[in-house]
Length: 162
Length: 228
Image 1: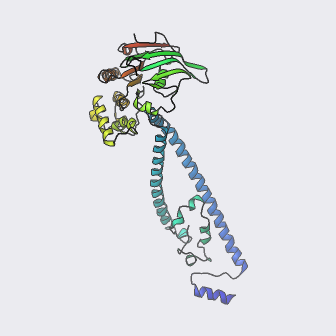
Image 2: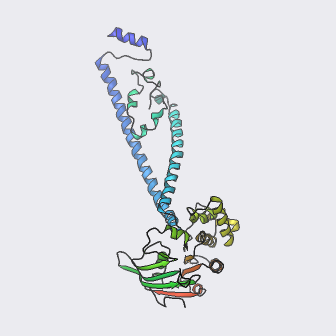
Image 3: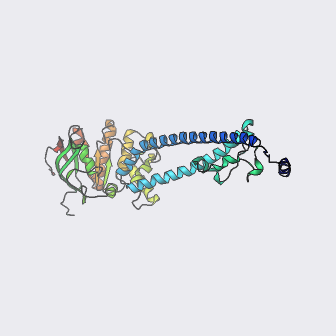
C-alpha cells in the first residue's frame, strides 16, 4: 500500500495520497462540514436576495401603477403597456447581468487578497458560473482545494470552481 | 352620421360604487352638439367627474347608453383606440410622466397610431408652440410651473386631433392668471379646431364662459338635457 502511495505521489506531485481509513474519515468529515456551510451560506444569500428582489418589484408596481394608468387613459392598449414593461425588464436584466458578472469576478479576485481565503480558494471562471447561484450546480464543492486533498491537478481548470 | 345628430348622446346612465350602495349617477340624460362648449357644474360628490370619466371611457356605466362620436361606450369591448383618437382628457392634476420631457409627454398618445418618430416630434413641437411653450419642449414636468404643466397636458390631449376635449377642473389647482391662460387656450382650441369641449368646474365664473351650463345635483342633471 505504501509503495503504491509513494508511486502515486512521485508520479503526480500535486496529489496527496491517503492510506488509512481513519485519515480518510477525518478529511471526509472536513469536506462534509465545508459542504454544509457552503449550502447554508448559499441558502441565506438566495433568501436575502429574493427578499430584496421582491421588495424592489413591489415598490416598482406601486410606483408604476399611476404611470400605467396614465398610459391607459391616453389610449395605450394593455398589450402595448405589457410589451413596454417586458422590454424594459429585459434591458434591465441584460445590463444588470453584465454589471453583476463583472462585480462578481472583481469581488472574487478581491477576496484572494485575504491570505486565509487564498489558501482555500482559487476562482475559476467558466460557463457553469451563472447556474451555480441558482442552486443548479452542486458538484463544484467536491473539488474544493483543501490541505491533504487533490487540488489543482485534479480539477480540469486547475483549481476550485467556487 | 347625421350632421344634426349630437356628438355626445347620453341616455339613462346609472353608475354606482361600493356594490351599489353609492349611486354616483342616477339616470343621466344629456346631448351635446358638435363644437359646443359645455360646462358641467355642481357641488362636490354630485357626479360631475364620474360622468366625465364615463365619457372618456375610463369607466363603464352600470345602466344606460353613452354614444360618443359614433362609439357606444357601454357596449364596446376595446376602447383604447377611442381613448387615443376620439377624445382628449385634461385632468385636475396634470398627470404628466415626470421622467419624460414636455415633448415626449405630448408624444405619448401618438405611439401606435402610425406616426414615425420624426412626425411625432414635429407634431409635439407644433402643439407645444400652440400652447405657448415653444421654448420648453426639452424641460421635464418638475422644471415647469403648474400652469405650464397644465398647458402641456392640453397639448397632450390634442395630440391625435380628437373631436372632443374633456377637462376635469383643469384650473382647480392653478393661480388665477394661470387658470385664465388655460381657459383662453381651451376657448382658442374650440374656436380654431371646432373641437367639442366638456369642462367640469366648481367655479361659476369659469362656467359662465361656456355656451351652456349643465347643473348637476345628486347624480342627476338639474337643468335640462339638450342645447339651449
